[in-house]
Length: 132
Image (cartoon, rainbow, N blue to C red; front, side):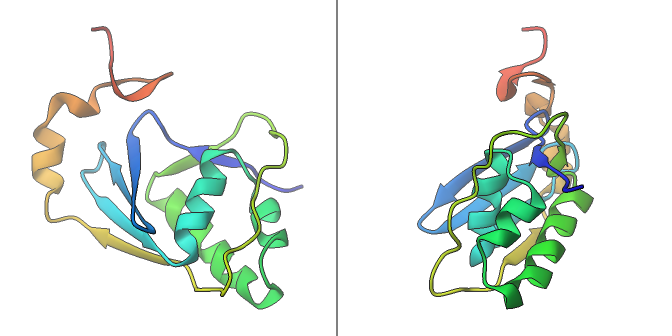
């Protein structure tokens, strides 16, 4: 059975900047620069695509890199398992293929953890505060 993942909106925010996606985990204070196919993978995850949905749209030689990217995103708390399988939503892989690149930064972790912005509404995610 294929596993479905979604962005962990209760603790994560993401923004695209000229082909790069920056994702921040307010719980850990770590932030991430997603480049190459990692941006495409993240967009697919935001729409609830499964690992298989994404891998099916990529060249066969890219599938191990896609699996590693999914593992990294989950290990960093950026994604959580989806309660149910959504409709297939993965776009075709970007061409030319560029391996997923995920850079992790923790230099601001302590400052982010001190900021009350991480106290978010669990259903709506950031920037909606819990019990305003």
